Length: 91
Picture 1 (cartoon, one colour):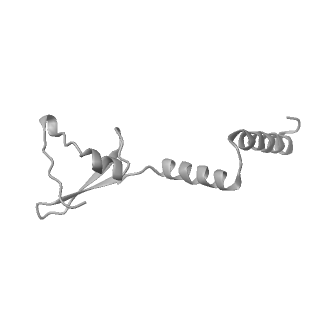
Picture 2: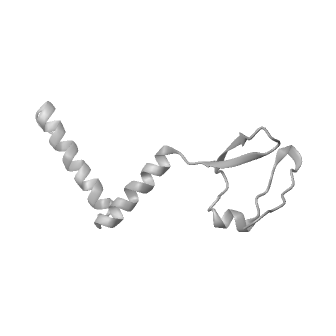
Picture 3: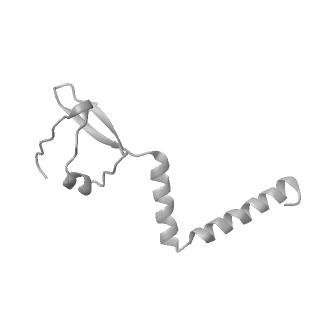
């Protein structure tokens, strides 16, 4: 993509060009870490939450296995009932 010029606006806002946002799937509300390289340069690195990463991984696994959300929830309910019976008697 090369070099892109951006401008700092009021209150320190920097607008990323549309092509950059689309290419890297940057959406409103995304959080970045600013790394000061201490030579007058800095790096913006997206911060992806561990929860989001795990949720994406779970969704991919479910899709690969052909398991629907309803099937997953039903299996979880059955496991909960079995656990409850085992540890506390009747469900």
